[in-house]
Picture: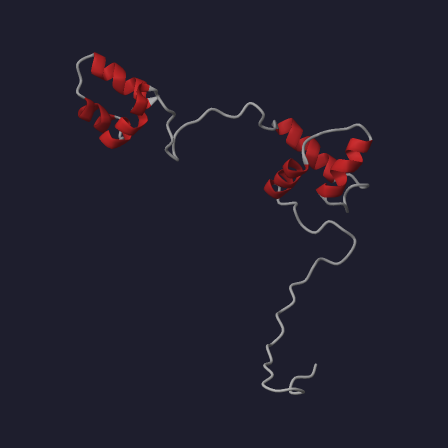
Length: 136
């Protein structure tokens, strides 16, 4: 953490401002992180963070893709695949994880036998100023 690096530099005799310049954060950011004498986490967007412990492994992702590409599930969306698997006592991941994995594999397209939904344009607006002016 940057806070600990700055604090170690200060223990060795460095001033706060040069330590902040060296770690590429502003003095204001350092003071905001130290408010209340409790070290807070690095909230910058580019900060290095540990990988989540519950992240799907590559094997689990491949299992989801293999399941979705089986012939009996090939025409079904994840909202129907997951409950069918749960009825059989099989749980690979949540429905949202199925959608996320399919989207990352560029397989999240229309999967049913019916036609894909079409975008229908809005009807042109007609305005009636008196009775019996607009008929459709």
